[in-house]
Length: 180
Image (cartoon, rainbow, N blue to C red; front, side):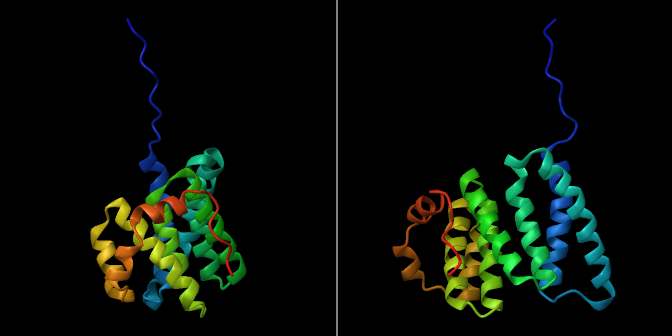
């Protein structure tokens, strides 16, 4: 009888569940859409799930560190630590590019762009949002692409000139451009 490989009970869904709970809680807190009565509940969920996900990231860094650094960036935004947030967004972006995690890199660029705009760095913010637009498009997230176009008024003709291939080639070279 052929021996079958032992299946690990922990799937990527198991690892991603605390990540999604934490990142959604932090994004809602950072967007100021959380009702006051749910504020501390969301903050507590984010803190607990962040701790759990940190263990997963330490156990398999090549798979989970880009996600972890995005989580840390959102946590830094929540606590008003701008420089730490910039550093974590930059590291998450670089690691997602190196690992070729298109969806993660698109989300990192979107969140980084929104953060930059919030702190008054509009040009840098729009640069990251355009990059996110191209990555979401390459990933096939058509509704997300349309939402970004509507929300930020990207000129469709301008975006057509910057092809998705060019954006992906530039992104997957490795390290993201430094924050200027």
